[in-house]
Length: 92
Image (cartoon, rainbow, N blue to C red; front, side, top):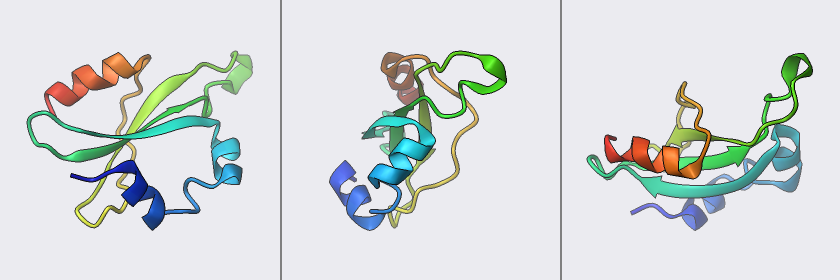
């Protein structure tokens, strides 16, 4: 099973302090789908939530991890809580 340390070692620039600050990321986890056992990069972030004069809002975003631990395309859905992500992972 993929771990966050493995993903971070493969993509050090993705997790750099500068990148984290630019995108408004707060934390990262690697979680696995219950049905598929597929790994996902899960991050809490303020990214782009303050557009159009809105206050920044913490939310969760998910990227699938490919077999070589490359970070796949961001899924369209945004989640309000980590528990919402975990519920989504029940079916994925």
